[in-house]
Image (tube, rainbow, N blue to C red; front, top):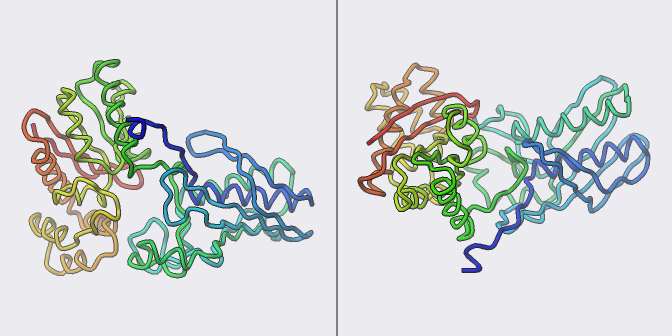
Length: 363
């Protein structure tokens, strides 16, 4: 029981580490002294202190290296060296680039355009915003170049899905909230059980909103502003487990909120939706698209898609909005099959831009 309930130690994303290294490098460059400890602000407002392993600087360029800590549920990038190199540029602003070991996007369907380094939108914003704040604080009139590198990134990438996604030459710099939350352990399941218990016993909730992560949780709060905070529970990858716990606790309705990648798996009956649990089945998505009248030429594009998000883009661009409701219907059906009668299930699909895609309920 101790193992089931002990609190797990969070780690920090590659994006948070790259941001901290960039701040340390810039401060070292501006102050012309080694700055090894820096504090950054994560997307949710939490302030975190990072310590650099190494800092080097000249009067024109500085480099800071930090070791990524994945916490108690480390991924392939755990203990990787994240390096930021900062140099002055004549034009104002921040020019962000990927260096050795940071992959480059070669296929559509990802949140980063083809040809760009695989530094996702939230880390890009974090790095640039942090650098701009330092430049303003020290009244620096010039701009800077920031290059993020991961010396062992190309080797690390072999342990990820990057190659299949068309990210070549290294890893991606990721993270939507800066923190690595351990999802794949019994302790996280125990936290779901506790959260459901609090929702029922402390807040009297008969309807809970289960999200796959922080972004979908925030989106759920905009859809259900009248609900108590306790009603919003991050289930992570554990869809089936969370639904069963809801039924066990006497919950009357469970709303699942997430994006097409994970919920296309739920629609096929896969209730553990980690990226390694099952690949995206594009043939299944093509069959759903066929049901709503998508022509053969577009179905072939669906089958050859790179990501589920790319399929979503295809459907939106061609006006097949009913595709998303149909996918939600299948997800509801499979969720109900998982738990049986007695629990009303709602499935809501959203985009990366926090837009509603589809919605379906089965009582």
